[in-house]
Length: 106
Image 1 (tube, rainbow, N blue to C red):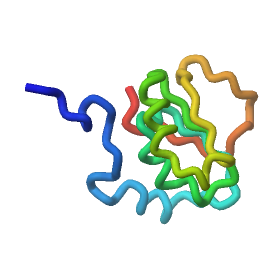
Image 2 (image 1 turned 60 degrees about the vertical axis):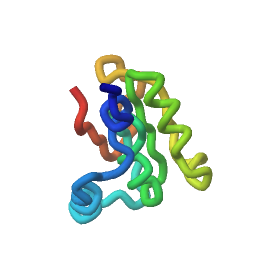
Image 3 (image 1 turned 90 degrees about the horizontal axis):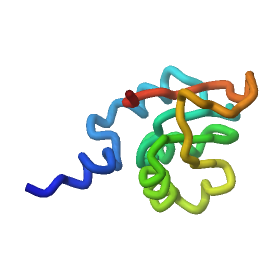
Image 4 (image 1 turned 120 degrees about the vertical axis):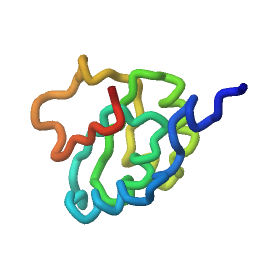
């Protein structure tokens, strides 16, 4: 049996429809600098990109980053940085971000 694209690449949308809604209610993103660790295909990145000042989204899998770039709307290209990187080797100085997301990553 062929592996589904959802299993191979992650999930392109919030399947429960709850994650982003809860984040928007509980976490003030407006004007913030956000780091998303383990962004996968950029699902959460795309859902939240309109509000923060800037988002840096990293994932250790270069294929996932390529897919995230493919699906990122061009209107957010200037405020979203997608790059291969690992939680174990962050290259950012202290206090570079106001908020850090780390979900569904292991």
